[in-house]
Image (tube, rainbow over all chains, first blue to last red; front, top):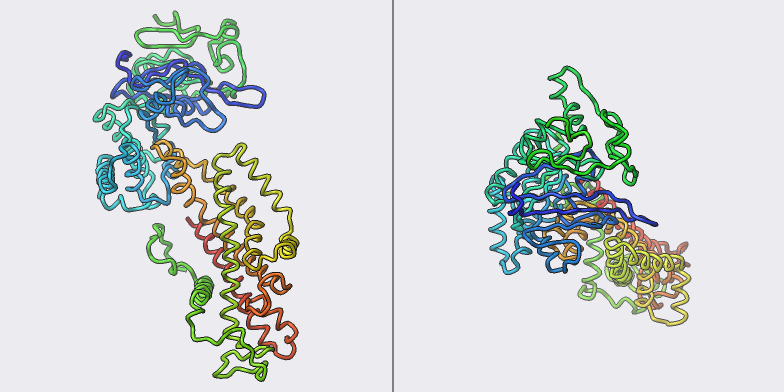
Length: 328
Length: 282
C-alpha cells in the first residue's frame, strides 16, 4: 500500500451513538488508507461496524450517530478535528457513495437522466440544462446502459435492480469523486447481475483512478476483486493486509473461522464448521480481546488485555495475542 | 380466468385507463362542478336573487328549468351560483389549511427535533378547539362573512394536514434516495421540493380531498345556521336552510341542492380513494 500517495486516509476514526446519559462507541479507532485506482474490501458480520465506517467516510451517518474522533483525509483535505467547514466540504465532495438497496436509492418521481444531470449540474454549477442532459446520457453510456438516450427519459420503476445500481454508479461518478464508497452494492442483486456490476466497478476504478472502499460480507467476492482487505469485528479492525496474504495466511482466529464456515471450505474438508456465538452488541464492554468468547484459542491473556493491531509481515496487520509467534 | 397481468405497467396510458366506472364518474362530476363554478357568471342564467313572488314554487318550465323556490327565485340559477359559492368557500378553507399544514408538516418531519416538538404542540392545541364553536364565536365577534369563516376553518383543518404530511415525511425521509440526493449536493430546499414532496403527494391528496368534502359540509352547516353565507345569496347551505320547511310541500326545492351537495362530497371521497389505491399499487 502506497501510503504516500493515498487518496483516502482514515486515522483513528471513532463513531459513537448518542444516548441520553452517555454515548456508546460503535466504531473504535479504525485507520486505513486507499491509493488511486485501488479497491479495498471491508468485511465483517452484521453489526461489526463496517457500514458505519463507510457512512462516516461518506459523511452520511444516520441521525444520532456522530464521529467522535479521528480524521478522514480525502485528497489532502481533512475532515475531523479542528478543520473549518470549507476543507470539510472539500473532503466531502471528494467522496461518492453507492448504497446497498438500488430499489430505494433513486428518486421515484424524477426521470433517470434528470437525476444524473442534476448531479452533474450540482458539481459544475455553470453547466446548462442541455449540456448536463447530454453529459448524463454519456454517463449512462459509460456505465454500460444500452440505448442510454432513450433510457434517460424513463423513470426508475422501469429499470431492473442491476440497471438501477448502474444508474447509482453513474450519479456517483458524475460528481467526479476521487473516492467511491460502495456499501454492499451487489448484495441485493442476483449473482450474474452482481458480476456485471463488479466488472463495471473494476473498470471504472482503473479508468478514473478511483479509490474504492468496497463493503461486503461476502468474503469470496471480496477476495476475488479487492487488492487489500480490512476485516472488522465488533467495531474495530482485527486484520488487514494484501488480499492474498489475509486469505491464504489468515492470522486472526476470527478470519480463519470465517473461512471455515463458507460452503467452499465445507466442500474441501467435508464438514461445515459454523462459528458459534454472536457479534457483541454495541456497548457491551469487555476489557480484553473482543473476540474472546467465540475464540478457540482464548487464554487468560485474551480475557485480560486488549490486543493492539500489530504488524506481521509487510503491510499485514493483526489484532491477536496469538498471532505473534504462530507462524513466523 | 385467463387474465394476463402486465407486470411492467405503463405509466403514460392516461389516467382514465385504470379508473373504473365509479371513479371516472366521481372525477367527472367534480370536474363538471368546478367548471360550472368558474363559468357561472358567463352563463345565460336569470338573476339568482330576483324574486318572482307571483310565481313561487313553480314547477319545471322552459322559463325556469328546475322551477322556482318559495320566493319565486329561479332554482337552476341559484343552484349553479350556490355551487360556485360553496366550492369556492371550501377551496378557500383547504388552501389555507394546506398553505399552513404542508410546509410546517414537511419541515417537522424532515428536521425533527425542536421544530417538530414546537409545531406539534401548536397543532395539538388547535385540534382541541371544536370547529363549530370557534366558527360561531368568530362570526359573533368579527362578522367577517363567509371568507373569514372559511379562513378560520382552514386554520382549524391545518393540523390535520400537518399531521398526515409530517408522518409521511418521516417515512420518506429515511429512504436512501434522499441521502443520495444530499450526497450529490442538493440543497435542503431542493430535497424538500423535488424528493420529498412527490413522495408524500398521494397520502396528502387523500387528506385534502377528504377535508374538501368536510369543508363543503361545514359550509352548508354554518350557512344553514346563518353564520356563513348571508341570507339572500345562494350557497348549497342557504338553499337548504331557506327551503327546509318546504320538504313536505315541494321536496324538489330541498332535494336538488341536497343531492348536489351529497354527490360532491361522495365524489371527493371516491377521488381520494383513487390516490391511495395508486399508492398501494406503486
